[in-house]
Structures are given as C-alpha cells and as structure tokens.
Image (spheres, rainbow, N blue to C red):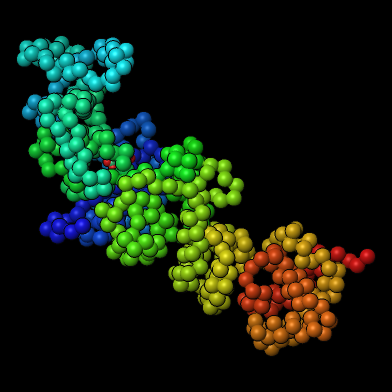
Length: 498
Ligand code: GLU
C-alpha cells in the first residue's frame, strides 16, 4: 500500500491487564510495532485497566516485561485508560447533549422480559429502544426522581454504517441490526467500547491494528466517532490464531505454551519468537520466512495480513513437542546461525542463572568461550541447552546419562584403553583436534580395535552423554587438563572383566 507521508502514523497496543501476555496479544503488539517502524511512526502502549475487578498490577508488570523482552519497545506510554476517565465521561455527556445518546431507565426485570419474549419468538434479542421514545417531559421527570439509568447510544435506524478494513475489506452493517448499545453503566462507569474509541481519538491513533474479535465492536465505534465529529482511524483486523484442532488458544486449555513468559523461561531468543509470530497471520510476497528486524520491517505490510485464521500447531498434552515445532525450528535456526558475538549475551544470561558463569569467559577465556559456544550450539534447540546439555563444558560437575554409560562404557577393556589414551593425550605438545585424532587413530590401529569403541567411550567419559559435536573438536575445546582427568576418573563406571 502507499504510505501517506503527510500524516505521522500512530498505532497502539492496548492490552487489558487481566492475565498473561499471550501469543495473540504479542503478535498484535508486533504488527503494530512493525507498522510504526515501517512508516516512521509512533508506537503507543495503552493499558486498558478500566475493569477494576479483573485488572492487576502483576498482569501489567508481566505485559511490560514481556514486551521489553521481545524488544518491542514503545515510543509513548504506558498510558493507563483509567487516567482518561474524565474524557470518557465528557464524551458521553456530549453525546447526550447532542441527542446521539439517551438515558434508559429500563429495569433489569423489564429487559429480562424483553429477552425472554425474543427467545420465545426465536429471534435475537435487541433492546427495543423504548426509552428513546420517552417524551420531553417524561425523561427529565425520571431523571429528577433518581431512578437509575444507563446511557445508550441512539443508533440510526434507517442508515448503514461502514468502514474499510485493510484486511477484511469493506464491512457494512445496517443501523437497525445494531441495538442501542450501552455506553455508560448505571453506576456512571463508561463502557469499554466508548473508552476505547475516545482514547484512540485522544491519542490521535491513525491505525487500529487488533484481533478480528474487535470487528464486532467497530461499527459501533465508527458510529461514536461520527457522532462526536471525529474522523475514525483506519482499521486492520488480524485473523485469530487457532490450534490444529481449530480451537481458540487459551491458557486454560493449552497451558503456559500460549504465554510469552514461557518462551523466555524455556530459552528462546526473543527475535526468534517475533519472527515465528510474524508468520502467524502474515506472509511475505516471496514466501520467505526468516527475517532480521530490519528485513521484516521492510517486508511487512498490513495489506498482506491473511484473512484466514492462522494455525498454531500444538496439541495440548503433546509429549514430543512442548510447543509448535515450527517455533522450535525458528529458535534453533537462529541459535546456530547468528554470529557468536550476538549469541554470547544470551548464553551468558543462561549460564548466570544456572550458576555456571565465570568472569573469565569475558576476560582471558573469551576466545575459548566463543569457540566453545560456536561448536556446541549446532544441535541445540533452546538457550537452556547451554546450561543443561552443555554443562560439561562449563563445569566439572555433570551427570552421566545411564543409557549412554550402558551403551558406550560397557566394554571392560576401556578400563585399560581410556587411561592409556589419557597418557598419550597428556604428552601432546599441541592439544588440537588434528593431533588428538592422530592419537586415537594410531591407538586403535596398534590395538587392532575399532576406533568407535574408544571414540564413543571417550565421549561418554568426558561429557556423560552419547551425543554432541565431533569428538576431536569437542576434546580440543574441553582442553587437555579436563580431558586427561575425565578419561581416568571414569574407570569406576566401567565394568570389570568377568
Ligand atoms: N483492551 C482490548 C483487548 O485487550 C483492546 C482491543 C483493541 O485493541 O481495541 O482486547
């Protein structure tokens, strides 16, 4: 689409702080952020905290933390919707004064009766608008007598309301299909539909980019804008994300896997998650999937957001994958392809929280550290692998996988082979992969044994597992002292000959 350079784009992410920052919300934030970056615009964060019973400070904290972790920093805010309450009330008063809204004195019983009548006739309940017909005398009299009332918007009955959604196209609704919706409750609190629109106007939002569940509200909000004499923003609604059984993602049915915090805990690189989320509902013109920040900003376009629901390929209770395999694929690809220097801060943080970090990794051992993480990352999926699977590189206290021991250390001859290899390795002037390999080859030839026996045995002896990078490179980064010691210390795990 062509960008209007005359007006600064202003977009917002407007979460309600009633729960976790979930993938759906984070994707909304990401699309808004991308659009602001692309257009040189402003990304605003608004916390829609008007639901006092359900909003919590903890949730707000979680949302701010999650956005910062993802790298989706906002330019303005956070603004809190409750702070704007006087503006919401002012708008309601204006609408009452201009006749676009009216006071409705219907009691709950009356409304229930209307609802029941509609049910009996098998038609959808729409408030019949009886209070809009109150006469000039009736209305002030009721107001004076102190009967509780709500404020309803007077929906034009004979015209339609329409807007052009950047994703879903033109959406039109007949006025008579929209009930006279409530904008202020009987206790004087404005409804979300009003506050949200008033805040967007107040924050001079140019593009409302939000989930498709917002479409139902939009015609009503356009009516509010029109009645207040404000040009509505441009709307772009995004498809919902469903699981592969077409169920809506929710914490209740899917658990933590739908929360951003979980990916932080499980060792995701934030941008890998952003890149994955970008494709939940958007695709590039050339089908490309991996993007740096700058590339994604360049490629992203609101008009390329899909209309079809996007699929998060995860089955609750899946024992093989703890999230959508594609998300893991993104993370592991980033993890093994970004420059080691870029990876280093993430690994440092991971090792710090696991108690495995040493200051020397940043000082005299820096070169070794970068070389090591570069070598071991090849098969890693998440950052936690550096402290779990990679523990033997950063600490002498690592555990032995019983299956690996049973498989690779079962030959009692290893009680002789490994210490002998250890002696030969100790004597090496240059402890390089090349020299180490020579030692192994010569030894197996001399003994007339398969190299695999000592290669696999050594691997388990020095790392506790049966998997990892090429053995000789691995021994090189582990260093002579560790290797020599571990090859000797493992003897008690090898069965004696019978
Ligand atoms: N507070 C609303 C929500 O969390 C925001 C809707 C909107 O973006 O307009 O769903």
